[in-house]
Length: 324
Ligand SMILES: NC(=O)c1ccc[n+]([C@@H]2O[C@H](COP(=O)([O-])OP(=O)(O)OC[C@H]3O[C@@H](n4cnc5c(N)ncnc54)[C@H](OP(=O)(O)O)[C@@H]3O)[C@@H](O)[C@H]2O)c1
Image 1 (cartoon, rainbow, N blue to C red):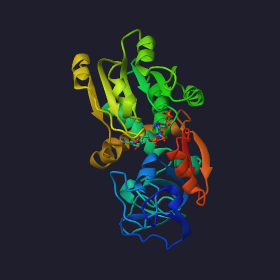
Image 2: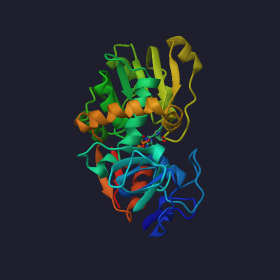
Image 3: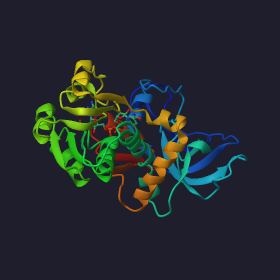
């Protein structure tokens, strides 16, 4: 099969697209003909050896796929050849075939565009868990989303609206904010042009945001605790900007607020039933067309290094997928 191979840790340009043997599978595994592979910021980190999850070269990057099941191991009961599935695999996705443990495979509702659906599980799984279990977002509350045109950010905008919140989208350009607006954001803040803290204070009449969804981190993350509401929840999603924010504990005290970590992958493993409940709701909304990933570009396998470069250089809006 053809695959994108990381033979040495480094930049996207060091990836090689080549033939390699199909991955071997075990009794509890499922072999998938890949229709779409999700591209996420952690893929950029993992090929450089900078992600919390380490992979030893040679490996194939790509943490999530959708496609059609080709064969199943003898212990697999509820999925069969021919089924359409989404699977989470950590690595192995940027290839014509991928093997996933059945515990991390989800049957997909019929009628979905499989390549588009590849962009769904990780970002919506993360954002729904963040807003529902970790942020306890309630209808009528104000939700601030940073990096609101990015992968997880745009899904948080859509889900925040679905959950009845007033959504304030914050991003670094007018184009990115226009996209967040198309996906339901009520208010917009361009943090390359205005102070996040001042803009939030104006938009909330001095009250601050009840829930803050932060996949960006750095200096912006640190600013968030200056514009959080009484009893607010600051959700630590990621650090796309690079630096990990140093949070001011005094501000948490003064606002009776909480800083709450979100680690969807670990949650999905530790609390599989709650995660499955989340996905029942998410797939129902997706199948009904009420939420939908915005795939701004599809890349071939040969273009996969470019996909990672575009993500690294902050050129991606919404989601991108690799379609073998
Ligand atoms: N906690 C979890 O379970 C979980 C799950 C999935 C992802 N994540 C994390 O969430 C973060 C975002 O992931 P994603 O897939 O949504 O990425 P993405 O699509 O690239 O979005 C990240 C956003 O961050 C902003 N940004 C600010 N500085 C940046 C920089 N130097 N480089 C790149 N982007 C920068 C960009 O928006 P502006 O230009 O508008 O600022 C961009 O839209 C990552 O840190 C990822 O590891 C966490």
